[in-house]
Image: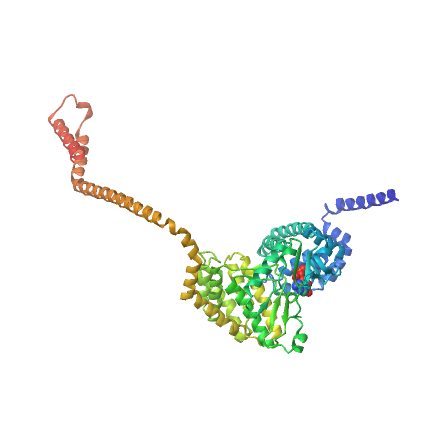
Length: 547
Ligand SMILES: Nc1ncnc2c1ncn2[C@@H]1O[C@H](COP(=O)(O)OP(=O)(O)OP(=O)(O)O)[C@@H](O)[C@H]1O
């Protein structure tokens, strides 16, 4: 049996080699490829009838969950991808089988160093949900609280590093293929993805993020974040309060509960701007699967957010430039938009502002053809950043996250309440924030923030004053010495200027003495020679010895 398989393989190999030997020298390789890969081509022809985005989506789905997640993240890079591809990739869904409950238990016990029966009063071995990175089980604590236990998939780290290596290889191939390929910045996209997915692997980090987001909204009636049980949370396991609410995508259930949809949509926008501008810490994975609604007061519905693995933050400078950019855009002040991009360093310093301004105008002005309420903030940012990219804007990961979150929030808001006027909701917020940034409250805040540092430096102040004063006196002495030297130099120069006629006369005398003297007759000095010698001596005196 084995011998016949080997014989068959040898025949196949010989035929293939024979064909290559024959077809390559006669230039028939394309025919050979088409012939031998006929079956593949037939599949390809069938696939060719689907659009390119659909083909890419299907390819990623067949490659497995890590590629699916990559596609989901890629779908948010509308600054790089054409809309048809981005729309198709946004449809990617995780279809991963759950892993057995006993495996989850083993991971929990290894991580928390105690048997599950000791950790929980009840633990459901059947998962509540299963995704590409983690699986969620329900449980009850001994103290009676209902919780969920999130457990990282076994061996996921190995799978990820293998798939990431493959993604890098593909990215380098695409980058080297053409200028178009390079424009997509594939290597940089994969690097971004690697960071994101590695972050998601660490549930201790997610627990930390959840804790901070919860603290930021403790006194708010806009957003609720489930409590983390720190004693039960580790790198591979995280235990948190079990929440109950209506999934935000379930519009029918929200309507049935008489939820004020306009209020709900506006609150979504308010939460986003509060997170970005007031807290500098925003949930950057706001897809509908991660958002629920508490409808206990349907007139003032409250959001519930889970899955804080991916969070974004902007520093004060970025926030300020972003707010000023949006305000300038809505005032159609494209000159200011261009200047802000240069001032912020988002585009290089030498960028020709005039050319940049007109490029922005040509992209943004058509957006104003729509009524203001239909303009998408997300699309505005995409338009702006795509234009800026042509003027060598570097990728700013924090802005990419923000752009993606804004698009999610907008999409969600309009789904809940199609007449949502984002600008009307956001403008007062931005204007208030801007005026606060320049007002006395902000100055006081800055003083308060800096005060501990200043207090720490207080004891050094006498020493600093002494050093500064002694440096000042040294400086003064040095200045005096320099002034004297300069005065001396200027005197010299003036004297030199006065002597110029004498020096010229000296040069002339020397030159004439040299011209009239015959060097060979120096032994037989005659009157003319004596005169020229006299002339020489006068010249020498005027040139060298006269001060
Ligand atoms: N605190 C919670 N209370 C109730 N259900 C929860 C809670 N946390 C998670 N779930 C359920 O588990 C599902 C998956 O949770 P989560 O989104 O945190 O996992 P994930 O692995 O990050 O999934 P994905 O990658 O798809 O976002 C949620 O959609 C929700 O149905």
